[in-house]
Image: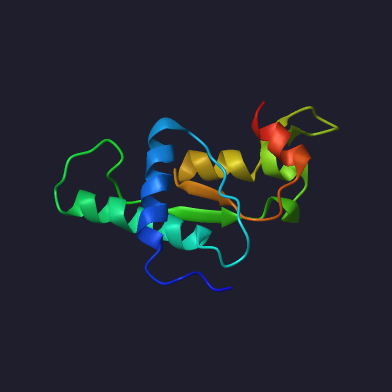
Length: 120
C-alpha cells in the first residue's frame, strides 16, 4: 500500500528526535511505508533552517549517500588488512565518512553479520 501523502512531516519529526540523541539509528519498515520520504523531508528541513539563519546544532545542509551493504564483501564495507603485506585498506564506510561526512544510508536487507560489525 502506498505511503499516504502528507505523512512525512510527523515521521520526520520522530526521526529528528532520534537523530538528536543517537549517532546511528535504523529505519525499519515495509516497502513504501515512508522511510525514504521521512529521511528526505528531514534532510531538506535541516538545510532550509540553516539557509534561513535559524541557529541549531543539527541545522545544516545534509548530503545523503546510500550504500547497499550486501553488494560488497565485509572487507570492502569496513576495511581489511591485505593478506600479503598486512597493510590496512579502508572500506567504503571509512572512505565515505572521511571525505564527505554525509548521512550514510545502508539501504538493503538487514543482515545480522553486518549489523553486529557496526557495533564493534
